[in-house]
Amino acid sequence: MSTEIYINHPNFGLLYRLCIIEKNEELFTTLYAQRLFFKVIIQPTETIFEPLSRTEARILVETKLRLLRSNGEWEAYKQVNELYQRTFQ
Image (cartoon, rainbow, N blue to C red; front, side, top):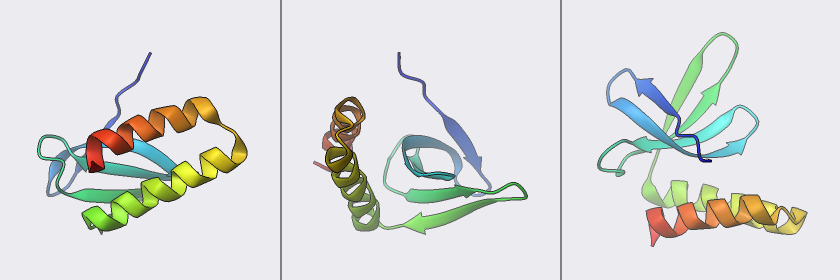
């Protein structure tokens, strides 16, 4: 079962989580157009929104795919690869 996660950006409204990049770092995109991407860093005292270009977001996901493949995490790799195909192809 897939869980959808949303976060509210102060200027752009609801953002949809695409995937977890690292501990406390996640990749989000705007809910409807999926044209604006943000790396969201969650810290105990604040949440930081770093805007990313489409290319930067794609590179983050490709890096995540390489890491999952090298660690042999095939189920997570399959999920992130499907996300990659839907979002960037």
